[in-house]
Image 1 (cartoon, rainbow, N blue to C red):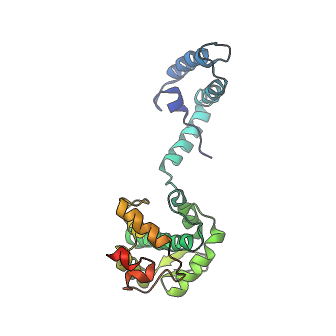
Image 2 (image 1 turned 60 degrees about the vertical axis):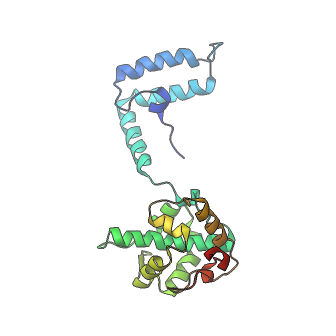
Length: 221
C-alpha cells in the first residue's frame, strides 16, 4: 500500500523546519475541523492529524522520509501496463518481459547478469507461481538458464532472439527502449494483432517470419 505524501498534502517542502510544520498544521486544522461550517472536512482533518503526528516527531519523520524515498525510486510494476493474465496472450507477454529484463540485466551488468526469481516477480508485479510455465518454456527453448538457487540468466540464443525480433514485436521493442506502452497508433494496432493470435507457439527460433509470431501478412503490408 502506497503511503500518503504528507508534504504534498500540507503543501510544504520536505526540508521544512518544525516551526513551519506547526504553523501550517494550525492553519489547516482550523480550515478542516468538522465544526467549521464552510470548509470543514472530517477526512482531511484526520489525514492532517496523521501528517502532524509523523512530521512533528524527529524519529518518526526520519523513518517516514526513508520509506517515502524508497517508494519514489521503486519502479512501477510492468503488470500495470502489460496484460499478463489473458490466456495465451498473457503468456506471450510474460515470456517477452522475462527475456527483456534478462537482456537488459546482461547488457548493463555483464559481471552479474543474473536476476533472482524474486526480482523478476517484483519487476513484473506478477506472482511467481504463474511464472513457472514461462520459465520452463524459455529454459527448454535454450533462451535462459536457471540455477539451483532460482537465478535466471539470458543465453546467447536468448540474446539472438531478442535482437532479431524486437523490430517485429512492439511490446518487446518498447521494453528495451525504456517504456512499457506502445508509442503510436500503428504500434497499438500491431500489438493487438499480436496478442489476438491463437497460435500457442509464440517464441520461435531467431529469424522466423513475422506471421509465425502472431502477426498476420496484412500487418506486414
